[in-house]
Length: 86
Ligand SMILES: [Zn+2]
Image 1 (cartoon, rainbow, N blue to C red):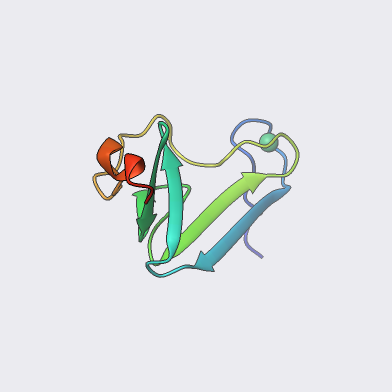
Image 2: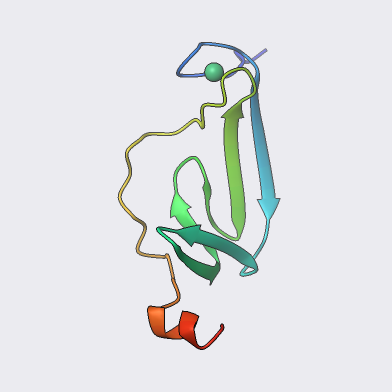
């Protein structure tokens, strides 16, 4: 049997791994701006068609390597878009 994944912060084995296919229907918010489309590529969050989260149910820690660069795949609305009500 494979070893259970353990939380990198608290070492609990209560780590939940969830994968969800959104295709290009994901939406997100970053620094006050919104975007939608494919999942931005961030290890520990997901990429492309899939949201793939791994979180510790004991302490809440999202499992991944942090900090990370802002992904280039973020497509955020511009301030002009927001004024027009998109
Ligand atoms: Zn934890």
